[in-house]
Length: 461
Image (cartoon, rainbow, N blue to C red; front, side):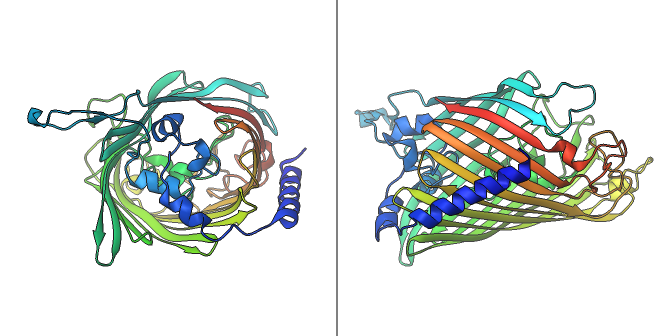
């Protein structure tokens, strides 16, 4: 079955289900949910709070309203009796979880491409695709962490993954409640509580065999696990969220950033986030913006730098279906302005233009009638300036036209026999890849040759 047929089938099933079972969530149900606090991604949070995974996830890793609040409150809410210091004369307080905050996830998969990669076998199996360990839970009453380390099967290496350490507090102002905090993390947007930004956006899991597009914006994963940032955030009256942070290069496997570095940050890369959220009866809506401004050395740590300014807008709508279901609409648009004096003026120029731009659009709809099943349809597109030196022909990964344009559909059906176990099937259909539909790489590989059928199992324990 082609990816297009998968999309048609999944959309049809979702529409038929919603039209036949749609009811409005009873008044007050969302208020009950918002007042509770629960876990964020891994079973150690459920053990800490004593609440089921469904308390904080529609289906992991998609956060509910109180899942978002749990994260903003620093992962610290606990339903367990804590270990404390009864003797205040010791001069230091103690509030320690009685169990270690440990979790693990295992991902295994099989990938079929529309056409096998040159010299490679199709129907690639990965066991594991990823194996991750987590330290995730409360450290003190105001400090919590989500620290992930991952073994990746394709590279055979083990290293630090998405990580976020927080201090959080709350106070009452004359104008309303204020949640405030500080986050130290290693990936811009990993600290975000909405599933619209790159770190936690759909697709939440994907094949490592599918060829990657030739270009992506800096905020769209280029600084992930290779930087460290610290930032402050606040949520006022459950309505307005603001955050400001700064990032520096922190590459793994290197003692310091030196002349051998690639794409090292010059100075501090500022990151910002603003979002408005509101509950309109049974419907939840968020409208926001985020972005960063980075100055990067292509190689080494001296000489001219290239500048990248990413400005993004995003939105999320959650609409209840029946008592236990939800329909979620998510979208994000990222626009990047590039100023490339270092690449343009290099001895061997790596950019034909001094100024380029890149725009990425993602829109997806998820229908989850209950915790057992879910289906998502997503559209993606990237367009950018034609640059014959930045985007050159190369087998599979190159661009014959000098353009970075990509577009297509992603469809996924998930079956969750248990809340911490997922079996899924995902299809990707490319309508354009690296600027063209036919022979996009200059070596007669077509966009549809990268169409992907991906079967996976995802277990959290």
